[in-house]
Length: 304
Figure 1 (tube, rainbow, N blue to C red):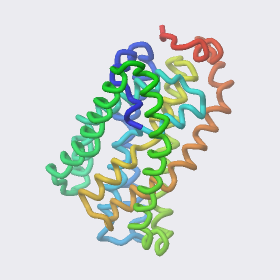
Figure 2 (figure 1 turned 135 degrees about the vertical axis):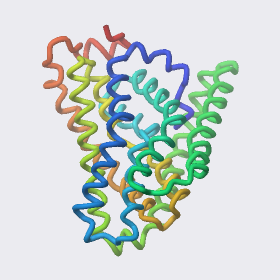
Figure 3 (figure 1 turned 120 degrees about the vertical axis):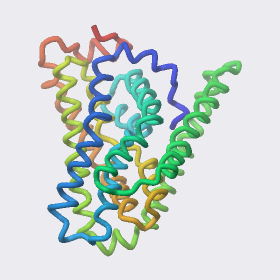
């Protein structure tokens, strides 16, 4: 999916500056910190007596890692389901990818440090290089190489079409492996899964609702507010799981917490898409918001 990300779309950020500003605020200024607070409250206090004492810090760490990685792939699916503005989605994901290179490790280290959890910086930075920088560079070089050829756009489209089923198969294999490694805990400890799901569910609905509301306040078009809310709610779970495993191990509480995020993301995000779609009439009642029919179908439109 990273091959679809055109880093040159960063130039379009100014065109959707209101939606981009809201998304960045929620993704990087609210989401990781709200999840840390929810983790500390629910896992470290409310459910503490019902959880294995030696894994509590690890569970909190997994939740923090999950929230610090905004989605870069599935968000295209969510945006398409609510007919979001594709150029906004693409430019926002490209911007998030660049920010993630520099912000993911410091935010994770800061929040885990506040939780008195020891963070091996070398492992954390290695995770950033392996799971963010290297795939992004390879995808960008491959994309540019394809588009530079004769009939480059047609060649690029053919490659993307062929990669679609392959990417889906790779995602399914990843999920099978993840659930396989955590299968015993998922089956034997459903109560722990349910308790870990509570802060994840709350942060998804809180952050998506906050982004949607703030976009309405600044009068972003609905086709921008929808993807903004969904980007603010979803997670780059492949990065989160890989980082949790690298830092704490396959059978750690951190790895389990990130896998719980994978378990609930699809149904929860489909619910969020449904709410965004059904609330469009209410959203566009606010004065100054460009109606959908005037904004997205006619192509990109700058926010004034």
